[in-house]
Image (cartoon, rainbow, N blue to C red; front, side, top):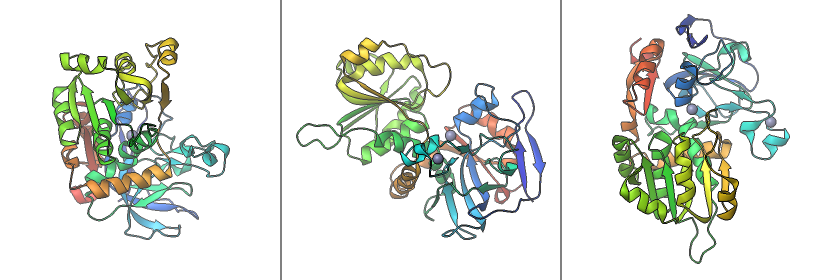
Length: 355
Ligand SMILES: [Zn+2]
Ligand SMILES: [Zn+2]
């Protein structure tokens, strides 16, 4: 049985549509969705806070199994992840390593069903991956629920961390101290990634004490936003880098304050229209700061993300961030669970979970 869950608009219920699978063309891959997770951007779309072309099949974080391949190197049964974007690999943007900004960009889970036959989202039994989509094999020791967020949350964080410059000081190959703003999925992955890359001091801030406690398990040092200790550490102006993954503009002045002169500020989570920054150019100039926006990632980051999770899957408790299983056919139930924020990621599965 093949089906897809169709999103029309934020005022209409999601609609399960049973549908024959399409033929695939040269370079394409038809894959079964093994397990998909609900990303925050999907929740924003469903709540009407983020525009997307409709009708569409949402969902872009998933691990899939190849059913039919017309691409070299992939065969039926292969368990893979894939880039959330499809690109031409030839335009000026692709050739500069910004495939996610390709002039012919196609995004899985964010495109109208009229584009590319409609099997383009992960809230479905199957997906068609196009010729310009990077695919990476998932090693067998990574559980599906841990593999699913790799192609959005993990790869984005890998991109962010790869932007941090080496510091010029003697015997210092990487920045020594980083402040992560937000103990959500991206923040916790950032803690683990920075720790594995040898960063000496990785602080993680959040208002939410429960989430913040998790940062300890991922190699971070928790720091409650607004606490006395927080004020003391921020006032030290000693961080080489700050990574914003909280999506909250009120965090920005603290981030600027926390940086040392010449530091780097990476903006990752504020990817929504309500994001006018409450800082002045003077603050940036006088502190000689570099501010950089990070959106999605390119092929190299996806490869590194799979490698990172593969190497650390038994070291960090990634599984505890993911909810018990829902059926993808019962997506509204899963969305309710995701909106309750009991889990950082809620996951849905196809047939094997019982529907
Ligand atoms: Zn996402
Ligand atoms: Zn391109």
